[in-house]
Length: 255
Image 1 (cartoon, rainbow, N blue to C red):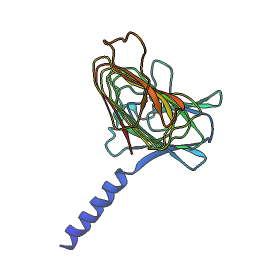
Image 2 (cartoon, rainbow, N blue to C red):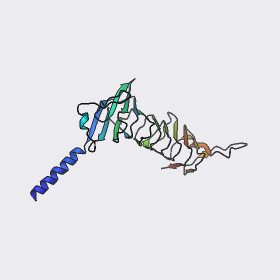
Image 3 (spheres, one colour):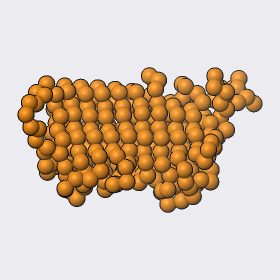
Image 4 (cartoon, rainbow, N blue to C red):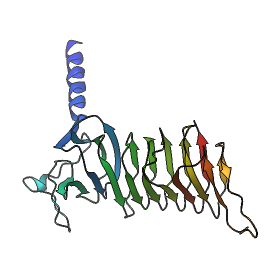
């Protein structure tokens, strides 16, 4: 019985050790974090002075033939993090690229609260991106991935071709415009009740649903009945806020 119990404890300890995340840190608290081609990633803001990259490595396959070698790709990028990522500083920004196109790791990145974010993913292996707590500018362009934004403020320009976009604002910044778009999937936005914006929503082939009080701009003279566009103001107007879902629905709700 004692031997069985000891074996169980050792096994659990090994599993716990394997499940620990690998991390890579760089000192940076301003500028823009640029992510290129990361398949699945969560970016979260925190009060700190380092960018922290992490991924769970317990299921990582080890290629024995690659012992002593570094992963490289056609762009000449090298894995300089031990996570399958190439990280470089360019013009005051941090540029991160995924070195292996077949990597299925989920990356978690913590960024200092003073940093902006740019994310781009164009190939068909694209996964999802989640952004939490950022109060600086966010720019996202993805082809196949879903986009989830939580506790954000803007300004931003977010577009997914085949994925959905869900955004929950903690407040609506008046420092720059906000554009949120999905071509073939839905857009779902939640605003605080005191948000101020000049809003425009368009969905040629979907519907628009909302419980937000919008002072709708009424057109004079002839109207284009073939397009579904709503323009108006929220709480007296404010920052330009554009929403588009070409082939699916738009949901605009208040907390």
